[in-house]
Length: 220
View 1 (cartoon, one colour):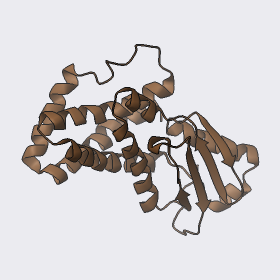
View 2: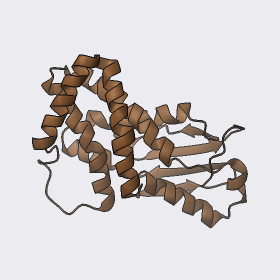
View 3: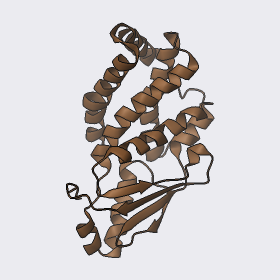
């Protein structure tokens, strides 16, 4: 996702979605109080301060940008007195709601007929583009056949940074958001991902299998 598109998403989609979710989970008054705490901690709290100051690759900067509002919200909920277990549950709801909308903007999947007519090199290029949209450059393509596409994510920046921050329990919430999106989307594919790095496996094995969904017309 390019910079302008990302700014648009953060301002006009992510933030309103998070506020609506907080209102649903906490009620209007408590959601407003958490929003106030969020605004305050945004000025002085750097959740990445304890990490070594090294030059970050583009995709690492992208993952930090995605993680920062989650970590600020966690801090705001803590300041508001929300217990740890409840904080994680609320963060999961917010990440799922916003993540589903992020995925809807970026999960560009050709319809089955278009995919079948693509030469192999173009299929691989499309998968690489898809991976780049989600900030996942470290991946191995394992299938680009007529009826499926599959790849293994071999490094997850969310997991890497959350582990370094001592918050590994948050990483799986992003996996859950993927599950929610693909379970409810109208894309022409069935989604499987039995293993994830966040849940202790060596890689995340994404597999998409084409199915018949007449209303799905997503084309690149």
